[in-house]
Length: 240
Image (cartoon, rainbow, N blue to C red; front, top):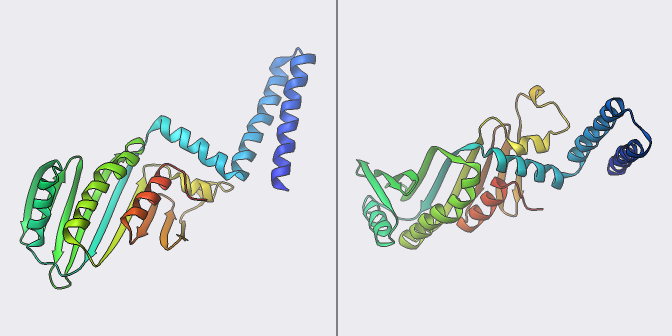
């Protein structure tokens, strides 16, 4: 019913435009009226057609290329100790990954600067786990997809082959500076300024995606699924 209403509004807008082009000379008045109808039709279309809404937002983000803030944590479960840090360093160098700097904070904690990435590695010897963490890293919208598909993928594929974890957990939080397009997607019929708190979580197959007013969060136990989901959601192309 609502989509039928949108079609009717577009027919009225285009009909007024065609009529004015043929029969009307007073464009100052009629042009304003027609523009109002067209803007109303666009607003209604974006409110009721999800694909069009996301396409417009994706185009806008490609133009303005806003920065995002990344926070990421990966946990490998196994039987790890402090010697695993040496294995990690050797693996990076043997795979010709661009190791710019390594800072040793303790026997069980190091900071690696690899390419454009900087992350901390911590070994919990008591639990036999390794934590990889990225904190508050600024990444532009257009660069996000490339970063996921190249640097991050290479690093964690190398880590999986080297450490052979029994289980892995991958978590990524992307905070949008100023505007989260997915917040607008879910509440586009409301005034965003009137919404103080917002949180929605849903499952994509066996993985979890959460949306807040300023961010999206992805949690999965598969590196491949992290690549797929993060690429889809960062490029405003979520799974159907």
